Amino acid sequence: MADSVIITCAITGAIHTPSMSPHLPVTPAEIAEQAIVAAEAGASILHLHARNPETGEPAPDPAVFRQFLPVIKQSTEAVVNITTGGGLGMSIEDRLAAAVDASPEMASLNMGSINFGTFPMLEKYSKFKYDWEREYLARTVDFIFPNTFKTIEYALKNLGDAHGTKFEFECYDVGHLYNLAYFVDKGLVKPPFFIQFVLGILGGIGADPENLAFLDRTAKKLFGDQYEWSVLGAGRHQMPLATQAALLGGNLRVGLEDSLYISRGELAVSNAQQVTKIRRIIEELGMQVASPAEARARLGLKGGDRVGF
Image 1 (cartoon, helix red, strand yellow):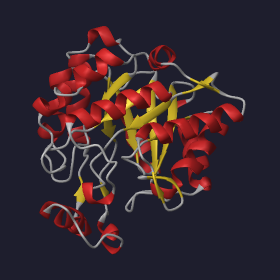
Image 2: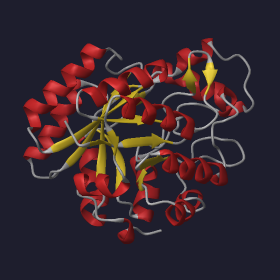
Image 3: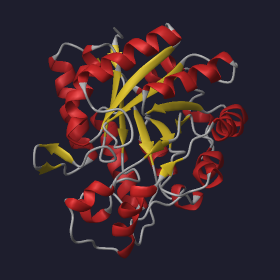
């Protein structure tokens, strides 16, 4: 078991739409503010997407990212982790644009193509503030989130090798671990590397404790001691799976990208509220929360002084 638990906080994401919660950060100022307070609460890694400040729609434009990245860097020591998942229907070039522009210490990288179904949320939400929201959810009934071997290698070379950026390898199913093992065996991914198990997305592996334990065992078999791992539990599974991850010796991710709630039926008022809750759980279990400096050392990051923002 690690000496301390790395908390990642995913601030806004590209899954939830503005009508689902008044607390979801949309503008650059809101994203920056929530990221900074989440770091103050104990998050050592901040996973960041951008949104159109007028409509809240996911946005790949590096210019939008640059409205909040320097503010976050100047106000916190946390590691900035920029998405390469982007939003539905973006090309790989669009998805990488902000990270290539900013040259961050970390970026996310999805390790396989999956059906990515958010359309069941239409059963819960009947009224939307913006016209794009309903169609954005509805079209996932016939949507494949593409992450081929070609696009993964493109990201590893054009962002990883070219910028010294390391990755949060997002694995939505056990086959994605084998995809990662392929790139490790080819020498395109070098230790230490960081795996994010993603459970509970429709189209990926289910959010069961048994599945998390199986992913943990499989990763150990494939990678030995070359990696760190974390878990993302979608929706109501966020806190239970985060707690299980800490007990298994792993790390964890919370944030409004993954769940809009703090408890059953109660919307979280901020990302920091979720960080504070899981930090309390971790510390009551007798563990410590990792500082940004500890996270950088364990993950072999290049340092905040070598980013491009």
